[in-house]
Amino acid sequence: MTGNPQLTPEGRLRHLLSIEGLPAHILMQILDTASSFVSVTDREVKKVPLLRGRSIFNLFFEPSTRTRTTFEIAAKRLSADVINLNIATSSQTKGETLLDTVANLGAMNADMFVVRHGQSGAAHLIARHVGPHIHVVNAGDGRHAHPTQALLDMFTIRHYKGEFNRLRVAIVGDLLHSRVARSEIHALTTLGVPEVRVIGPRTLIPAQVERLGVRVFHDMSEGLREVDVVMMLRLQNERMDGALLPSAQEYFKYYGLTAEKLALAKPDAIVMHPGPMNRGIEIESAVADGAQSVILPQVTFGIAVRMAVMSMLAGNQG
Amino acid sequence: MQLPDPEQLIERLAGLIRADLREDTCLVGIHTGGVWVARRLHALLGLRTPLGSVHVAFYRDDYKKKGLSAGVRPSDLSFDVDDAHIILVDDVLYTGRTIRAAMNEIFDFGRPTSIRLAALVDRGERQLPICPQYVGAQLSVPRDRLVQLRSDAASGRLSLELVEREEGT
Image (cartoon, rainbow over all chains, first blue to last red; front, side):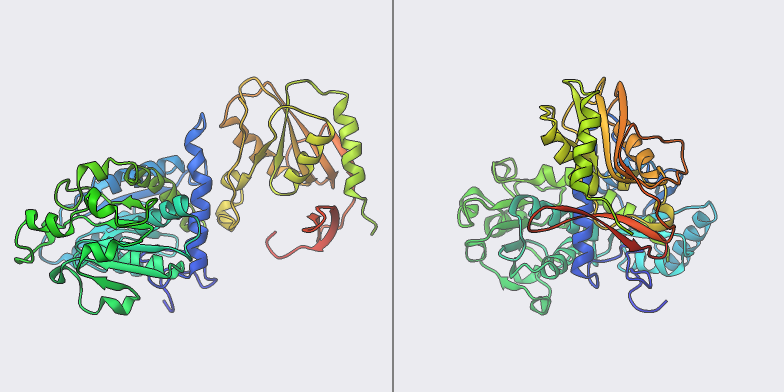
C-alpha cells in the first residue's frame, strides 16, 4: 500500500484512522454529508437504505458505552446489520491475537470494522491487513486518535459558530493522555481555525505540542480570555500511571471550568465535552448544564457524523 | 441540435398541471434541476402549500458502484406527507431510476394519497415502469450525450445543454 492508507488511489476516503493526513475538503465533505443525515431522525422511517445488506462489526477491545452505542445507532440508521463484540484484551501476544480475530471476522463476510483499542496504532494495523472490500473506522486507539469524536466536535462548532476561519478555540485539561485532543488539534488546524490554545498543567501537556500549531497556557484565566469555543477534556484517571496530579480537588481549583472562569471567554462562547464527564473535577455542574453548554447536542450530532463517515467509506472501494 | 427554451417549457407544464390542480397539491422538486423547475411552477401556479425538495443520494441504486456523491443536501418535506397529493418535478426524465429513488424517499416520510410526475423534458429510454403525467417536451438524444439544465448565476435564467457523457455516468 502506498501513500495515505486512508485514501483510495483516487483520493477518496477508504478507512478513517486519524484526522492527521486528511485534506480539508474531505473533512468538509464529511460535515456536509452529516448535515443531510441530521434530519433523517425527524422522518417517520428513521433510516435510509444505503448500507442494506452490509455487516458492520463493532470491535471494542476497551469498554465504551456512548461511542459504541452511537456507532451502532448510526449503522442501523443506514440499514446495516451490526454485530457488537466486546473483546477483553489479553496482555500477551496482542498483535497476533488482534490479527487472528480480524481474519476470522473477515471470513464471516464483514464489510466494516469499527475498532476501539487501548493500543495506539491498532486500527492502522487492522487496516493494513484487511481485504480490499473491508473498511476500518478508528473509534479510539490508545493515546493516538479518536477521529469521529473530533469530527462531531467540528460539526458542533460549525453548527453554532459558522465559519472556522475567525475562531479562537481553547482545549482544556489532560492533553497528555487524550486521543481526543490530538485529533481535535489536527481537525481545527486543517479546517483553518487561526488560533488553537491548549490549557493545562505542565505535567499533562505533551512536550513540544506547539509544533502542532497551538499556543500553550498553564494559567486557565489567561487562556480562556476571549475564546469562542471551550473544549473540555476528561481527566483520564484510568490512564494515569504516575503521580501527575496532587489531587482532584486541586485540579478542579486550577483547571476545572466554573461559571466564573467561563465569564472570561466571549459571552456567546460554547462549552463542549466529549464525555463521560467528571462533574466537580474538570467541569462544574452549573456550567455542564448551563445555557452555553452544547454537550448533549454533541452526542446527537455524533450519530449523523458517524452515518456520514460509514456511508462515505462503504461506497469507496480500495 | 436545437434544444427548447426551458422558460417556455415551464409555462407549458404549468398549463398542463393547472387543469388537475387541487388546493392541497404539493410540489416536490428533485435536486438540483428539478428544484429550479418546481420553484418556477410553484410561483406560476400560485400554490400556497410548502414547496418540497428531495436529494435522492441516500436512495440511489448505483451507490455500490459509484459511492456517495459529494454534494449531498438535506431533503425538505415540510408538509404532512400522509394523505398528501404530490406532484414530483424533475428536469430531465431518462431511465426512471432517480424517480424510483425519490418515491422511496418520500415514502419514508409518510404515505401520500397520490404521486404524479412532471418532467421538463422526457428523453425516453426508460429502464423502469415509470410514466410521467406532465411533460414539457419529448427529446430524442444520442446515448453518448447528457441533457443538462443550467441556471445562470447572475440572471437565474434556465437553459438546456447537451454535454458529452463522462465514463460511468
